[in-house]
Structure formats: C-alpha cells, structure tokens
Image (cartoon, rainbow, N blue to C red; front, top):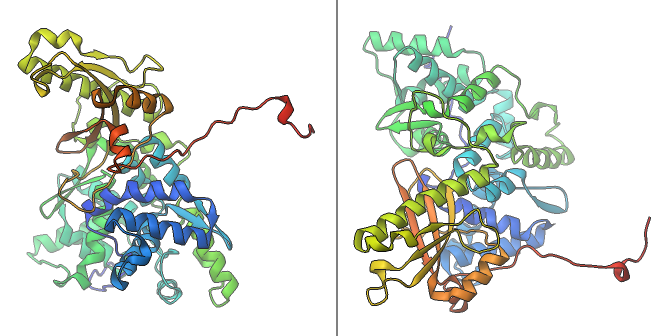
Length: 463
C-alpha cells in the first residue's frame, strides 16, 4: 500500500535559475564544439578562459577565488553533469551528440526533452557515496516519465495537480522513487487526501524544495509542462513526445548503474565515463520527434492536425523565422512609407546572396528612406524571453562565408535579425553592420569550418 508519508530527499545537480539556464546553454554549447575533442587539460584551460570572458569579461587567471569557483561550477556541474554537453574517457573530452544537435537545429526545448528522456535515479552525476546510498535504498526511478504520466492521467480525468502534490507524493516519496508504485495509485491517494481535506506538502525552505523546483524547471524548459502559479499542466501540443515518455516508463532504466563494482577505483572511473557518454546521447531513434513546433512552443491547440512541413528541423525553423521577419519588415515599412512596401522581398530560397530579405530603411533613415537594407535571419526557440539587462544573457549564431562576404560588402546596410520564438512572445533583435562590430571588438567572429582543396600532387599514397 502506498504511504506518501515515507519521505526521501532525492536531489539532483543544482542548476541555475530557469532563465539563466536558457541564457547560458548556447554559450556552453558553442565553447564545447569549438574546443572538443581535446585532452582534459586543454579542455579545462580553454573552457575556463572562454566562459570567464563571457560572464566576467576577463581571463580566468585574473578572477578572484570565488569567481573562479563559479566558473568551475558552470563547467563541471551545469554544462557537464546537468546538461551532458560533453563526455570523456581516461584522456580526452568529446562533444556529445546532444550538443551537436542543439547547435545544428537551435531548438533549446528539444535539447531539454532529450535530457529529460535520458535522466534517471540513480545516475552518474553525483558522488560515489550518494550513488551507493541510492542503490542501497532501492531507488530506481525515471522522474520525468512518471510526472508526465501522472499529470496526463489526471488531466484526462479533468483533474489538475499542483507543485506541492508532485513534490510530496512523487518526487520526495520513497516508495515511488523505488519504482514500486503506479501513477494510478498515486493519483488515488492524492484524491483521497483531497476528499478528506488533508493537505500535505514539503517543509518550507530551499533544502526541502529546491530539488523539486529544479526538476519541474527542466520539464518546463523542455516545453512539456506549463507552470501556472502552483498548478502543473501538460502541454497538449507536445502530446506526441509526452506519449513517448509514458510508453518508456515501465521499461528498465536505460543506464545499468547496478553492474559496476563501485568499491574499485577502475570501476568507478568506468561508470562515470560510461554515464557521461550515455547522458549526452540522442535518446530516440528518430530525433525529429523531439522537435518543437512554433505552435507547440506558443501553446496553440489546433482543432485539425496541420500538414507537417517538409525538410530538416533547421530549414523549417529558418523558413518560419524568415516568414516572420518578412511580415515584420512589410509592416514596419508600410507604417510610414506604404509606397515602398513592394521593395520588401523574401529571397531566402535564392542561394548565394548572403541575406534572406531585401528591404528599405524607411523611417529608420528619414533623410534617405529608400536606402537598401539587407537582412539575414537567424532563428532559435527557447522557453524564457531573453532580457538585454540580464548579464547572464549571451548568444551565438553560425554564419556562412557568403553571409560574411555580404556583411563586409554592404556594411551599414547589412543586418542580422536574431529571432527568438518563445511561448509568450516572438522577439526580434537587430545587429547592424556585424562586420564593423567585429572590427571594433563589440562582437567576436571566429572561423570554425575550413574547406580544403587539393589535387593529385598532394597525394602521398593510394591504398
């Protein structure tokens, strides 16, 4: 019989605030891709310096002791253990597949969906003593799978559960964490306690509630739940991937942590290495099911199913961003110079131009409103809205050689529009003359892809 009063504090790696996690994820991912694969010493040194420049605008060695500890926490605890952006063996550090996917599709909720699918208790993110305690206490649990299954069951019966109930009856309930209790049993006890006017929740204070809040934040960053005050609601527009979580709930833990002899140093090292490789892998055979549509992100429930867009996640997101900016530019120009609206052209399908939209300055250059404006659109999806006043906000994009040549050629007429699709708003930020800003040290542009041309005279041997 399920007794939720048998409580058990099962913590996860302490992250950052929800918006800070969303803000720093692209920066972490870019650094990892830039320096990996490499030795552990080089990884530590370069990640230290690059992240120090982003967060503190200074080199790692110039930071005080507390700030150095903060940087190390970002790298080992958040980017590594919590996010799984890199994995390692005895000598080298490598970029994880989930990191590579994120930089390719710019879909941050999809990254968090993958993270939630791979997560389990016990896991290889904590100290050996904690892992051994979890194993000895019989903990064997997929927290995100269970929460989504329970919320779905409740909502199908017109019941809305809240954070206090999920915290007390699920994420801090020992029998549930041991994998011995079904979602039906949990819901039944919650409803019985409600009927008896019995209110149960965790004690107040971060020690008791932080691990609950952080797990729910990860589900929210994955766009799988909506936190409405104290209530928790599944995002019905993400039902297809939620069904994957539910179908995987009854299956054994994906990572068999129980096979390692944690009393030996070699087995400990092997377990940590194997976990790092497992946690950063793509959790599903078809990665497209992780994709976040704009409708799902902005919680638009459509009566009839939409015809799926064809193409890769990257091209679909690019098309959506271009369409949004095209409409934005037409409205901007039409507001003050309607006769110039026909100058706004969507050219994203024409290869080799180095920009997606040709427009005009209109009201942003009152002396010469017909001056040309060339717009390259770069889009991404995230849950929180980026705040220009937030020091943790940073971003990165990839640009092609043709785009950089266009930026150099058109200078003040060239603009990058960064589009952020979020649940509550679509935000567009303009970067004018990126070539000039790079020359002036305002932004940083680094070559990350090289083309090698060679002929017969370069060949040393044919096998």
